[in-house]
Image 1 (tube, rainbow, N blue to C red):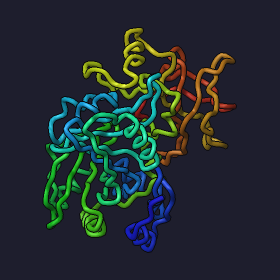
Image 2 (image 1 turned 90 degrees about the horizontal axis):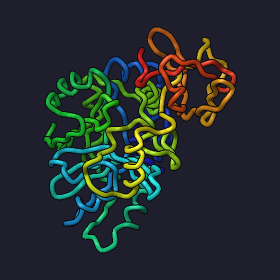
Image 3 (image 1 turned 90 degrees about the vertical axis):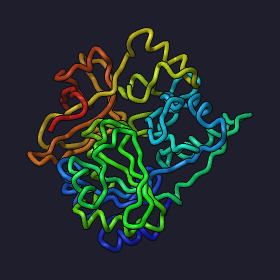
Image 4 (image 1 turned 135 degrees about the vertical axis):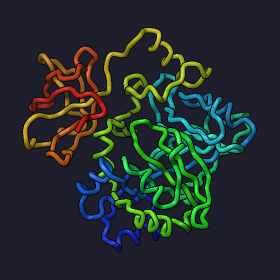
Length: 355
């Protein structure tokens, strides 16, 4: 668990701290519904202390990492990144990450709770390769700027991100501080990450708040994640899941060459489908008496056809709704189809959820 003076500063200003993705970070700043609305309609500011960062150096780094992940690292131009899965030989998901080409090194970002496993996998497969892995998570801070007004707020703060494409990262000097700005490599996430030396976190945070960003905690981020249909490793992505079941096609590249688990991924593609799909559910009834717990079975025609992985009551501006993420068999996962989640009626919904 990571505790820093920055988190203590935020707690002193009224934030309630909690553990998120392996690090202590604000759970909320007093009202997660208001913070969620900033994510949905405005611009939210997020402490991303839960993000782990690994630097890969050495002459073999690109070839080697390209053989470890599901996306194309080999052909990344400098300043570009891609979202990828790490698989085992059976094609099952062991973790997820974003890999950036930073010129003379690769930067890998993931969750702190995943970092030990991913680092161990990396270490296991570095045999005769000229690759060195260094954890710089505590040296390079990260703040998230997320929501439809993110560009407007960043412009007000003196940062031009108008030309940034998904997965692109640029370097800049801002208010005498060297920073990097990355646009999210996951298309469902409407936002940016700002990286900088850890000693500059207080001033950077305060400047973005002064520009109009609303501080938001991990509780609101989880609500937003569910609404946007973004699966989280360890919750919606498990070690028994196959890549194509998750619906995250942007994590896969079929022309990049060999990698661990590729044979299974290619076999699934050649057969044309998988038996189940990651999908959304809306639980009927207002209010729903009890949230479906992870693992709750989805039933149709008196048969188990899926399971729930995440669920939340979402405080939309026009009323609260109970939404869930999970898996359902392909023949059932049709938008508008009615199913049972436990004893509660629900409908299949297309991701991301509409307001």
